[in-house]
Image (tube, rainbow, N blue to C red; front, side):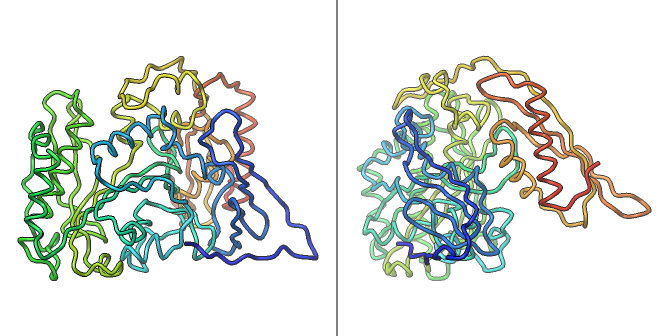
Length: 442
């Protein structure tokens, strides 16, 4: 599907190479292949992508490409995926699509405006101006539609630059579903499917809070018949309410709340929350698919709905996993706790003590992208950095210079770390930050 140009290596110079060979003797689900960054190009498996001014992928993130945690049967991410696929048993599944996509797939095909902030370099991983690591599984939505399946699920790893804490990681996993109906008889198809699947009975097990209405800010598309939208929306809500009932079957007095939302690729749109242990938690977004998306797939006579969710968020709640870094652990004490098809609460092994370091610096200008800072810290420190938090933001009253102070919490998930080890890492972080962002360290 991707046709990326190949830049020949210079005949006059030998590029500096930083090879990342993702080869594992312990984990069969890892992709075996080359992950390599040179001065002029990036190699991923048998593809070569020329670098340009947009290139911003780090070695640490590149090393995660091909891990495919969602396909390891005993892994919590995979267990959640399997349970969702089992619930929608008659849907076609796509769960091994390559994460390198074009910016057209990731944004344009989904009707994301050219100037939308979601395209920012500080939020995404670009191989070059036209190629990137997917930021969501929706990048493959047109592929799913063109497959001919009228119901399908897509799952995979997605990549976004983000803050550093126990619930954020530059690589996570998403799953989305999409269903289409023939616009000639939508209500009949919806009724037949609900009767055949038993979703109505399963959805009745949860208490639903839904006072959403069609509003100017969350409208029915002008090309859609309101009766068709009503039927499609009903099918969507039975799909989601029944799925939540299945996943959270052990939660007493389960409540589901529907809230009006906005997404570029659906309208009307909703977010879904569940009340878990007394708190409302957002679990997914959904809505009626924008008709131009279907039209672009040659499906002008269809109408449909789509939903998407983060698998880490669900797994952390259902398995009681306190730190998102654990999903990437190769510690057998973690992996051996889980079995395919079962939700089992995680039993923590010893939590090692943290090592806390602060870093202060003057900025060269008022502009500052914290995601870029966190990306650099993670690239230098790896998964030893547990959290990065801004603890002071000061502007000098006379010089108008701005100073920031960040607190970095270092902690290994599987061993003790020494103060000397962290001091060495912190010095490398300081040097890298000063060089990359031209800050004045304090």
